[in-house]
Length: 192
Image (cartoon, rainbow, N blue to C red; front, side):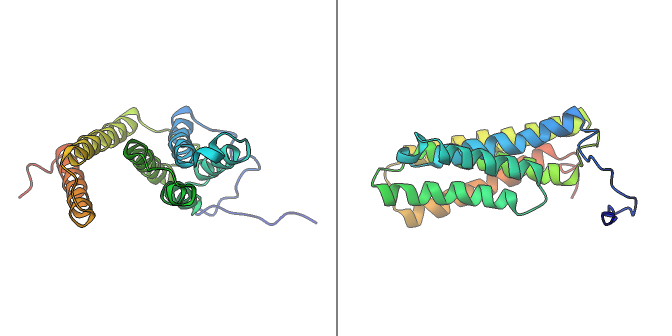
């Protein structure tokens, strides 16, 4: 009995070893999906679980799965696990949430999400031009840096009620993202 003929979108049969022609830039992009995702889950773990062996291995497994399948829901599962752990951990284990850890988890999840979006469009056997990766890195780095400055400004303000701080932070993040897109996308400043 022979195996079924699995075909790509183009209709050509797939090779037996899809990882035979993995190019370095595409592999680096997949690492840019795995590393921030794994670190975000590890940072979000409650201290009682971070010292063990099982939960860090689960974090690594989620990150590797997200990198291997960037077009699937695996990225969302990894990101959701980090967010859930960071939100539920302090409540369940009665320790104060750390704003710096919250920012780090958020920044890492943004990097994972943006890298997964790019990796989902580029197969492992695709040559990725340095300009594409450089543009992505510049855009992602500027969003993380701007978000860090915004988070610093919001936390430096006197204690704001949550119903003011959350919309203020969200509006600032949206404005910063729009500004970054405007400044870094070629030709946007000349359009009217």
